Length: 248
Image (cartoon, rainbow, N blue to C red; front, side, top):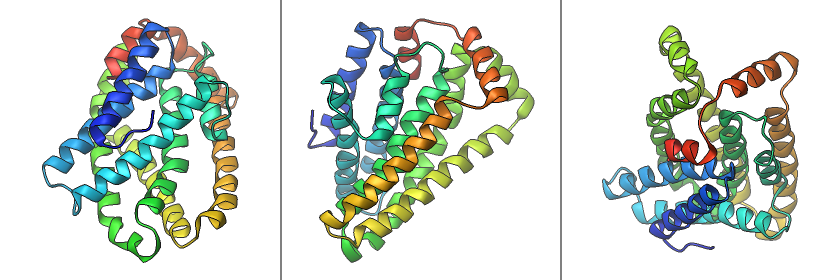
């Protein structure tokens, strides 16, 4: 399942989505969202958004291959990283809401995988040249916030009403959260880029443990928030394939 180009990444994601639809699997939720983001990155490369489009494609491929490899390991009953294990295990449970599935995928992929992929794309001192393009990914994610909210409101209709009441407040919070995740990933990138591969491994293992713990807090929120998510879950509409199609 290892891709060599961004087009191959999109093809692999489409295969994952097709598999999830046919197997009625919630694993397709994050795959559908990730495909959308990857298409936007491809368009950004074509439009000259990045300082170095070729480098950005390399980063996109290295980044995506970590997700593809984790998915394949999980499917083959092998152990992916702890962070991905938490996200994938949640897909077998009825209770997590769609947003929790998406956040669990983002936690594993942004908080763990992105810094590793960026450090391996631009090791050593070259990492500093990557920062502007790294930050531009934030712009792409922020541009998708409204679209994803509209999609989620089809699954949980009251979300649309809350969005109209809240105005831009919720978008600002979401964007801030993504920026925090990206800032964390960049900090990881700078640290790992200056280390040789054997030296990176204990740092990656420690980070994986931390992000798995964060994922478990997302998966099992405390009493009040847990009650809210259960209320939302009871109101969510649509079959798993229908929700995948909405997110795609």
